[in-house]
Length: 339
Image 1 (cartoon, rainbow, N blue to C red):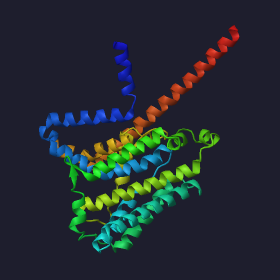
Image 2 (image 1 turned 180 degrees about the vertical axis):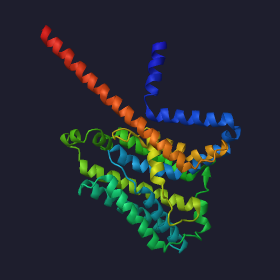
Image 3 (image 1 turned 120 degrees about the horizontal axis):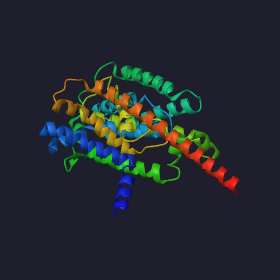
């Protein structure tokens, strides 16, 4: 009985998503111990609703990170889609038309990143850093360096629609996270992303379409960033030319906090959304604990720490795999000699 319970608990905590969720609960309880107001339902709901944009970006970049690459242009894509969707709706365009144009822009940006990385052999950090800068320039030209304001109240109210106190946007993000995780972990083509990130050479030998899959990862990243931009425009009600700046760092941090390995091959969209919840809670935590440190400073520290931890875990995994192979060879040799 005790052995079965031990095996069950061991199985649970090998699942990265549940470990991340446990960390969220413990973090909230820790802060609540010092300030009980933090655990009030309204504050928890506010954090959930505030995490939705980070969640969309984190889920999108998860495809790229799991496949062994990186995308630092998602913050700029978010700003572009927010500016375009907000300005079109302000100028009287139908909402559907504005959404479609913003999503197409995200898809195009992701496709450019994917083609540059996969077919032109440009390192992903270089191509996405470059396209991110270009997109920022496009935003300034498009907006003439001005804020996008006077967005209709009806569009802003869309972000205020809620069910059980949780924004409709968050429910949409949660649904996408569940479906995306199912596709990545339970379908044959969905598992291509992890297979490529884990062992690209082996993936090629198995006949997995590496180039197409990696390109799709960047396309999904751009698409999710565009969705996040539309949500941003509705939630904030105005869009600055620098909207989305620094969001890529928080999205990457959210992914790793949610169990997505920076080395590739491991992770899920549900985990990324849980990590986004942690990132969205940093600022409220600092406020409730009466800290004056900037949340970007804390985010930077967290990112460094999780990169180090991820590297150590990866090194440990490699060493364990080597030991198992050595043990297998040794046992095989002994067996052959005895035979």
